[in-house]
Amino acid sequence: MSEGAPGAAPDFQRLYEEFHSRIRRYLGHLAGAHEADDLTQETFIRVSRALAGFRGDSSLATWVYRIATNVALDRLRSPAFKLAARAAGPEALTVLGTAPGVELHIARREMSECVRGFIDLLPADYRSVVALSDLEGFPDRQIAEVLGLSLETVKIRLHRARARLRELLEGGCALSRDERNELTCEPRPDDVSSGT
Image (cartoon, rainbow, N blue to C red; front, side, top):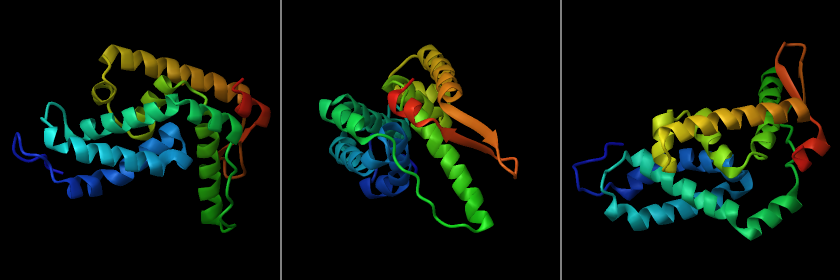
């Protein structure tokens, strides 16, 4: 989406169409799929209210992701969310079918959901940099802008988050290769729910 002339507010409908699915996916990674719809709606409510004041100091994408991050962090810090997260436990996997292409899709999805379970165990500060970098593909400099951090802080958090994620995976996930040599992950249920 072009950001238009300096000082001109971007068109909300075009902005929504361009960013909605990306923001929903990002928020799903950050706060969980069960929260993504509500958080996406709240993000675009805040975007619509603030759009006229967008000055163009950063890219439109950076600005929208910053709002989404703030919405998610507000929710993640809320006592109601923490209580609900403890009560919910790990989400169950859904099996879609048995055709070879579907089996490969399911295996990848299971691996992704297994890793996602461990990403969820990271502190919010680490989870946000991992989601923006590894799941959304943002460069470190843009992550720094989105999160309002220095570039060095982003690099440190990414390094620490990946190291912690590696520890969690090694301690709580049985990794193996299937007959197609695809990497598979079987979480150890006690480890995923307790975070050890």
